[in-house]
Length: 502
Ligand SMILES: NC(=O)c1ccc[n+]([C@@H]2O[C@H](COP(=O)([O-])OP(=O)(O)OC[C@H]3O[C@@H](n4cnc5c(N)ncnc54)[C@H](O)[C@@H]3O)[C@@H](O)[C@H]2O)c1
Image 1 (cartoon, protein in one colour):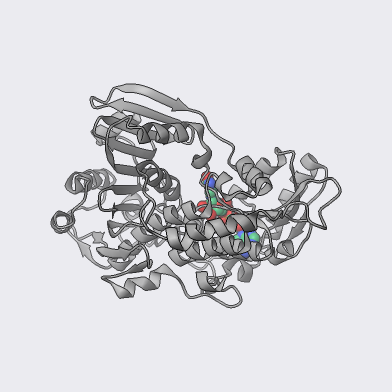
Image 2 (cartoon, helix red, strand yellow):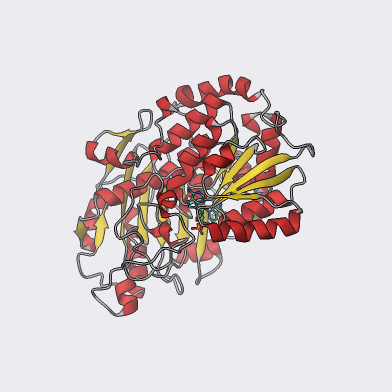
């Protein structure tokens, strides 16, 4: 392990382990049936799966449902009542759940901009917390979450469920034992079709939504909702979401970092990309989509002796010319979401939540790992054991992996207006030493864009800023203005404290 935050984070873990010895489960106020009381926060999409997981664990009982959309909360409560017998209390303000003695643990699947504050408030109130990925909306929120977990002696699990997957655990162990020789490079892929979210405009907010609470730590926007679909599509607006690099990305950046045995932040970051192709798709040069995150992005992370590359493609990925990747993913068309590890003796490919392949140097399959896991049950068990080391995805892992996405996006945002022709991007990449073949990755990306009708003769691709990062101080050293993106301006009373103030 490099030194990152071993002092700052893990040295506090031993102190925290002592604190964790104090049981949270079983305090006064717990109901007579001895079950662990759960509040699920944010239940429209992914929150529904949180509910299913707690319903099938006979140690837990869902007692409170929190959603700022009253219709969503009531729909879930109706459903839970049928399955559980007991109807949970629907509330719109999460602080009511945190004040409730019948609640022992919370799990949250709100939009990203709420993750850290939800976790910190919950842990300050003495609850254990399961927080969806990315665990934070910006880097400093992640550091604050770790500090809160250690200070209040609370379990904090991140929703990177691959950490509990049998197949991936075994594949990582296989690599660590030298199964594919020396491994220095991992490529995360999010080749996942994302259609335009519609034209930017002034759209009505559903009458059942409390928009002030929905916005929370983010400023209230005017117009209030600029996307046609209120729920879910916030993922592609940076005020709330983190694009697909920060949406699907944290699963794969986590596996990549875990597999390479990296326990720190990268020291140099460079990205390029754009929100491209929707004009071609709509045959309208002036079309402005409501999203403002990149749908096409290549992010390169230099860790000195190791390297992670993450590729995001939101346009059609059918009929792709990526010969090597097509072989390793065993498909030429359709989405490709996963990680490729490049070893001196072969490859390991993770292509689903419960499946990994091992290839020799000639790209012949030599081994497979299969099997999923029980990520929520792992969390509940750790809440019972009070041992942070029992968590499959402790918050510190979630922070390091989410930060990969955030740092890549910051490089992109900092260079967004720097639109260049392909030859200029190519020249800049030559100056950026990396363990990947930067030029080959660029050319594959350009081929993909051409196939999607993007005019690649123009100055169309943004070259991100080359950022140098101090992993200990969590600050950029060569671009002070980029440090502003490591946090955000908060709106009272939804202010996420920094690590020293949790
Ligand atoms: N681990 C996984 O595989 C996985 C899969 C999908 C989504 N996710 C994560 O789950 C989260 C939610 O994504 P989604 O697609 O379900 O979004 P969504 O927009 O469909 O649902 C979010 C819900 O949160 C509610 N909400 C917003 N602010 C709230 C607040 N302050 N208090 C209570 N409720 C609030 C909204 O009203 C909505 O019902 C995201 O962070 C996403 O990254 C994880």
